[in-house]
Image 1: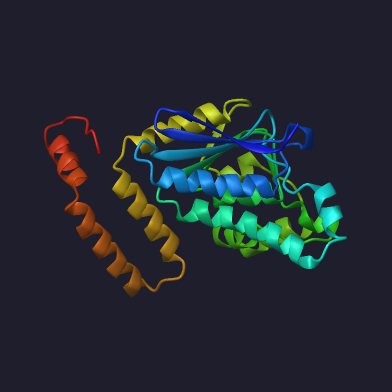
Image 2: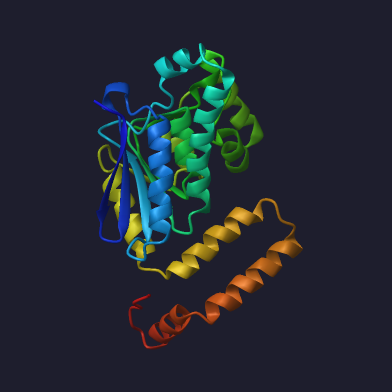
Length: 259
């Protein structure tokens, strides 16, 4: 069975499924390239308003394939560097895609699988799912932006604990910390994520894109810089066709149908 990233759709939502059941949905270079390609295509497709990333079966992703990593130890360092660059291209594509990306997590999300979920705009997780930064257990350090994401979403001491000790953390605790957006019962993560996506799909795409871009830029901006960006986005969105649709629908107590 080959590792692949399956692409399907439901309504206006693109569903990307990590499929590598033989290795608990471990990630690899082919998936990274397919993920970047799928997001690039979704960005220019007006029929797609949101993306959900999930894993096949009862596992989100076990992260890196340890057999492949062991083999790469016999290769020049550039081989592994190139592989990680592929993963990072996918992470950046998720972060910069103007459309909302939701992770639907069942079971384990380990290593790069955890990093991948953190890169998404929202996380829906089954109550019994577990997250672990497994790198230190095999004398490695994080990739996929895991250190960046954790340092911005949870206290430094807890991020240090998760990365250095490599201990598991449950979905319920991450939900309490505000990292997981929605909890659901086992086997319901995809359906719950699709419900969230449907709510996002009903909103104006230009508004969603602005919110995502503003949040991405906020970390590295001063208040003054961010206020200017907010002004520019607001004015641009006010003069977009969808603002006319939204304001008119609100005043007339109707449901808007955005373009």
